[in-house]
Length: 386
Image (cartoon, rainbow, N blue to C red; front, side, top):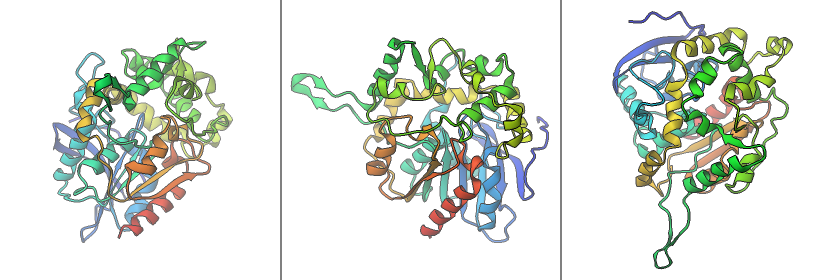
């Protein structure tokens, strides 16, 4: 058994491993675990490049409100072990429905048959969405944060007699992404870069060092970076994607580490950053120095692989019918990075959307940048569901 250094957790949170979770030994953070009587359960799912640690600011307040709160390091991340990742290996264990299976296995191992709400941020948002869409009997409600969910991919629709078929949503995305190479200067979509063979080494062994890379990456996607003034981009086209900041649609000859390096904040800004202190950031840099990024990058490989996307068409047309809520930072380009998804989520995908909140003073890392505002929206949503 690997012995890890203690995490700097607030009193009332504990760290432990749950064995035999779909072949994983899954590391979880828990709050509200010491209650005498059973409590309703909340499952918190982090994104990339994050950890269960990303929920540290809101777990204890949720527990004090009467909940048993679970935040795992998901497959490929942190102190969860039993996964193997390499850019040349099969990534299907990180397929979206396989990740839902991980959560079902975790809940079973913990003796939880029902979740009051599954709450996902960034890449954890689609996992939470697929949990609610496929197993509404277990996941009683869902909160999506920072990444809208546009629903399962639909079958292409067309008139067979004329042999004309309208492109499906993923095909439109592929076409828009392909067009980026023809721009002046040529550009590339970050998800396709993350799906490639060099992304892990680009970030893990970058010239500025891992800690400074993560500082710049978190900074440039936060409300602290003043150019973050997002707006809806309309339909899915190359021109729409080209309007996104460089950390989403990169110069074609640059990796992510080189892309964000010029935005490294000065020491005065770092010292003033209370939402992500140097001690907090040291947790992320230590964990990723040990694991690398490939475990999380495999999620992107599945998301950009047409074979995996098409396997989800079996659920095409299904909606999320449990109560839902969306929370993001007002300075978060992630809300609009997939043109049309934010609107579609509200109009047709989530049939019981009870709230859609953009929080002032927050960018992409909303539960870390503005935890009090996130907590208020979460508690209001959970109260409405009782």
